[in-house]
Length: 354
Image (tube, rainbow, N blue to C red; front, side, top):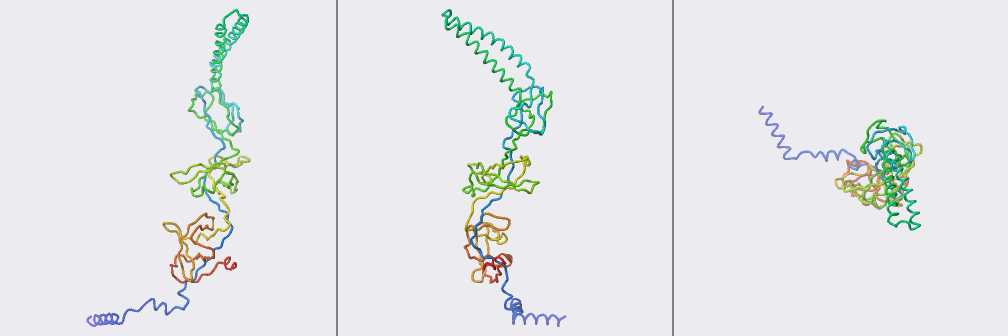
């Protein structure tokens, strides 16, 4: 044991005096001259025409939509619509019991006939100066009062009928004949399905690029088809919670294949940028304050903070931080560091353009 301890102690003293071997130097000595230069891929950014498009999500809305509700309380005596069918403006949908009101209207009509005869007689007497003007005015006022009463009763009768306020498609029936309803009772729903509205929101920074008449494309769940629409209104204020702006567009709906309430994926064309700088999405490195990219500068890696714009499925438009001719590194981003020498191999498209 004493010999073993002395041997270990002697070994430690020797390494202390002569130094430990440098593993980095050993690795460098065993490697070739090119092994310290990492090979990565990159591309040279050049100005190109780009249609700036923003993607968003939204909802499909009916052009007009209401819940069918009565104006007055009463018992339903007739339902005159078929569920899930098309109706025209003015069509009678539901009638409530209005028997008492119609009797009151007939009673007043009899009084009106009598008052009209009396007014005619008084008018003839007045023309012969047989009565005073005040006597004729009393008869005329009585006639007009009765006519106003008749109009009031007719207005009450009209409230006992529910008619379609516009052309549309009526939904499911929520009541039945004999049901007692009030102004809070929902009878059904009515939607105008042609055209449709698409409502969506975009970040406030894009507001200067949006105007009425711009084209949009949208897609709904269950369909791979893209449909076209036109912006017709932009909310003139920014939402304080989301810092977005609401936009509405109209789109035709032939065959009623799209229904209100559907989820929509929306693409809005903002403008054409003639000299846009585009980089692949994978070249961006996220940071707390934004994004950065790595570029090649005199054979070494340089870090650039960039401002981004519109994204597509593969590329991102760079608003600031790059200039035409910069070589952006697109691979090996986890291995490279600023100042590191690298060997950049241009992608096939960029190499051909060189």
